[in-house]
Image (cartoon, rainbow over all chains, first blue to last red; front, side, top):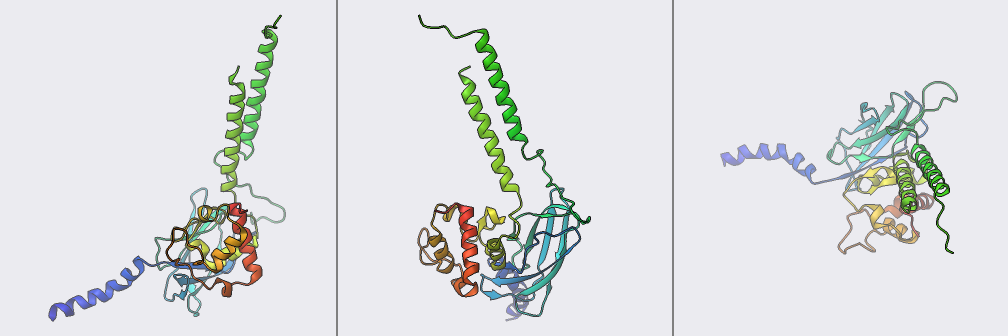
Length: 169
Length: 120
């Protein structure tokens, strides 16, 4: 009996972890951060549902922003008081392409990921931000292929002029 | 010299492949209504779907399970996920999306997924 009394608190302590380990939750966003400028607030509400159905309260969800340079920013979402609803105000710290993902606080092994977004410069007006590209300008492979093809074609023509194919009598 | 056409073909393929990778790494189209529904409903918490930047593995990869399917099939997969389950069994996907989202939202979501999987 004493053993049972000793084990019981341990079981109670580990129960939430065990319950979370195999479960999953869905995370819905009230909006997406399209067209934002650096530093501009993105007010977003998260809806977190266990198995896509049951609102989950008492979680500590986080939104993580990562850019191509490896800059990483984490924003904690706070409960709104409504079941399964959490709110956050997110600011992308600088312009460029950012990925964002949400850790729901229920099963953090399974973050919800979203498509990358282009965050514009906070400078006024028409400033545009070029997407960081580790392999060079977008059209570079096509231009390079074209130049190589032209070179190969010119070489072929030159050789053909020098050594015209033998004509059949 | 006979290798010239092959060389050109290889160069063309290399250019196409690079373009494809480029397209994949590009941000999603700004303000796509279907993507907004996708994000609002938390679809990316369960599914992998490249156009939505989603990499989850609870449910099927939509690029595989819905590739080449009709829009009607995609719609049915959302509102009645147990109507047809690939490989048999039972889907764990919620079955109340027809009630949760409006018809225009559902249309937008179906269109977004159909574009992403090149549906028939």
